[in-house]
Image (cartoon, rainbow, N blue to C red; front, side, top):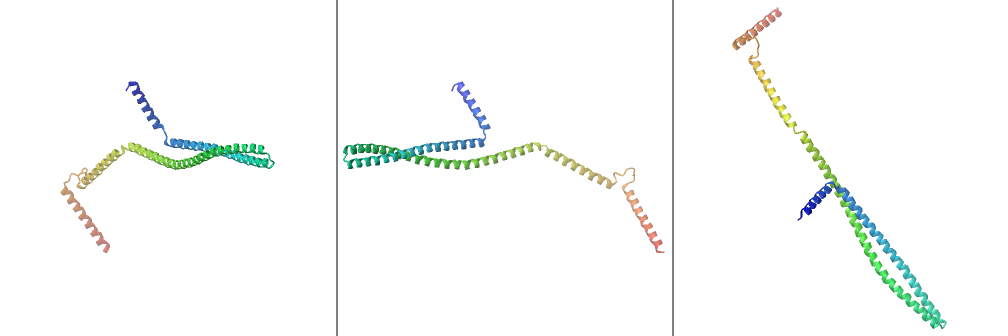
Length: 231
């Protein structure tokens, strides 16, 4: 393979790839449908032309039949007048008209067969167009659905990229919350044990004794008040 041929094939392949990427299937389907309709119209025009030829032949056949009948009548009239020469001439013209009618009939039969074929072809063509139109609409709907799905997936992909750091932010916030909760529990524990009581240099046992003495004083004072109120 020559270098130039290889380069040409590479360029053609890339160009074809670009065309395929830019091609809209909906436009392609519509264009194919329009071409089929144009073909059907051309078939119908050809059919109309052939049918016109058939009608012309039928008119000529009717004229030939009338001519045959006229010449036959002339021959009869000539014989009735004892003019055999005129009768012979009329019959000669009748034979010519008969030959003409035979040729016209043969051509007419051929035209009729052609018309029948064109009519059948037109019907089949119409059926194919109807089937393609249905298939075209289905394919366009499927393509539209696929396009929508692609857009949704692309949107979700973009959203996933945008939310990529959210999980890390949530994890850090959760760690800080757990640390703060642990610290609060530690402070509560220290407060309960009295470690955080500023300026109190008493021992734990002294503090507990003072608490009992304070509670006893309160009880004694309460009993005193109750006795005074009874008097």
